[in-house]
Length: 219
Image 1 (cartoon, rainbow, N blue to C red):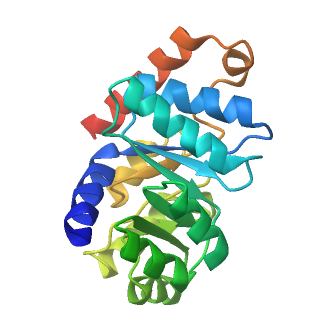
Image 2: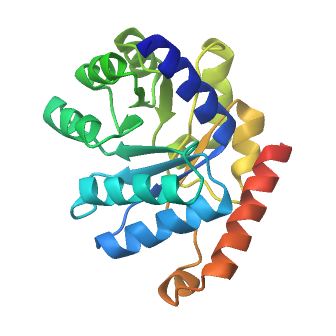
């Protein structure tokens, strides 16, 4: 049963194309941004551990997804650095866990819960370690350090690995990352117009995000 759930979640994550990486200094803004992402049709949303009361935000987003008919969306927790954080996130209902580096217990705990793991790596050695740990996805981080060229070189060696570059990915350059071999991209501060977010211009934010998703799906 756990394997079946994991396979289903893996298929959803692969089809998401763009994962909003929400990292805000207050829970209210994080929850609002997640609600915008749900309304726009995002299939995956990452809430970073650095958000105050992130697990309460996670529960609220899961509840909103159910009420809005978006139970298909996966909600995960990122910047998970150790097993204790991983357990807490999974107990709160996280569908996937993300770490900036290789944290083997994270993959083990996620697998046991039927959740997914995305371990961070940059070099071939780190990618091998992430694969050996059982990562469902390898997060190339920080992506902008090497750019699409770095990802293309990595993908040529690790053809069967699902990569998600994160850090410096924008609507303008995401197509280059997809062409280089990414199947998903993580987009953080570049995802939302800061002025529109501050003004809570929901319609404009949703429209822009839907255009981003449409462009990602077309690559």
